[in-house]
Image 1 (cartoon, helix red, strand yellow):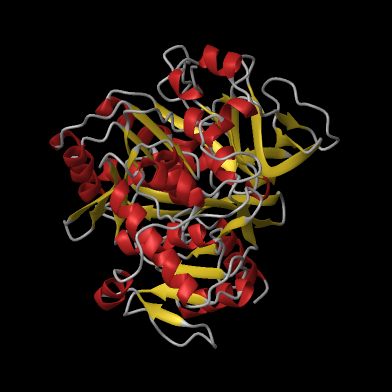
Image 2 (cartoon, one colour):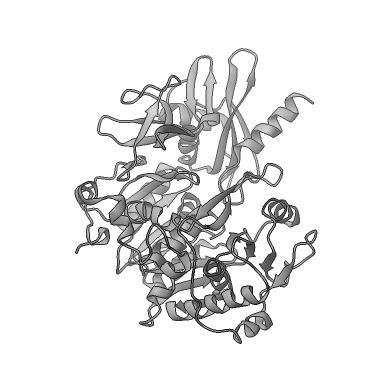
Length: 513
């Protein structure tokens, strides 16, 4: 009987999709399911490659499903021997590697809860998260191993891995689909830590919607996702989704270098790439994309909007459409451009259309749907109610959605409503601008005016008046930065997104000092 993975067209996605059909992709059922089994053990018989890791130092690491099954089972048995019980939290702060994946899947096989943590967190960032989730242990590198107020910290070094080898290489899983599997922290600042998003084992079924229509995963793909598995994109879209479909996936470990990524894509023969907008911008900035052979047939991005100049460049360089994938950690992917679907037209700058089985609207403050082209808030139908995404957007006459920035990134000046994202996009098209962020700052006459923080491109610093005229000509006569500040760098979240809140806070301090 055909499965959802057998269909590739947009029309078929609307015709054949159902929740029951998603469950048909798994061994487990609504009562009993384990992510470790679904992503690893059921593919461990034929020696297929599960993961290829491109390390920043130039080394490549290949891990088969069989190796992953063995080492994750050993880790699960080790947890049992250490007294770690189902429901206990196990924090894992490691770069992609055999040790990381063995711990991630071994924890879930045991029935404990995996808590992946970003390796660049400082001591305060780690401490806040361990205090919040109270893990029974934290597994990290020898350099990071330090006292964390009573949390047991272990170094995943060669000696630790050698010790695991003494444990059995098979583990019988016993979890229900509703048992907790993963606690995931989103990329807030250390002073304003967001709550952990708590995922059950059933979440691996839910993410198939994004896998099939957001990243276009199909059997035979050679996937790559350079985002850290500490974040939602790298974990769910880059790791769990492809492995659950038996698809080889690639990961990046260490300090990111765009040219190292280009070499890995060439050497791995990757055919499907899903990355953050920042990754694509960095590849463009190398000026070396054409020096590397590409087998890519599907491209997608998520996390933040991409500027038009980068989008056009990437599509020309790789010869395939660059497809947006939009959602939130809480609700998952809800809008997509269906990579690989031959009958779906990708519109430049669009978030795409809703994925099957999901209702999305742009609404006015009173909850009524906006007309075509009218700005409002993007909302998702969830549990018989409309869930606010806190993102503004619009829908065109053909049903394509467009992003207009976070609700708090909308700037209203002298009655004009302006999008920080659109102004930043225009700024990034200026040859003298390397990076840009826009916020609204207080003004006695207009209430707010647009202020741009600009990292100049190499060479002479551009003229402010030239930049202002450039934006006015691309957008409108009122929609430009009236204040411009040149800076060496922009504040970013740990996931690499521009952190406009930090800029707003800095401006507020200046205003009140």
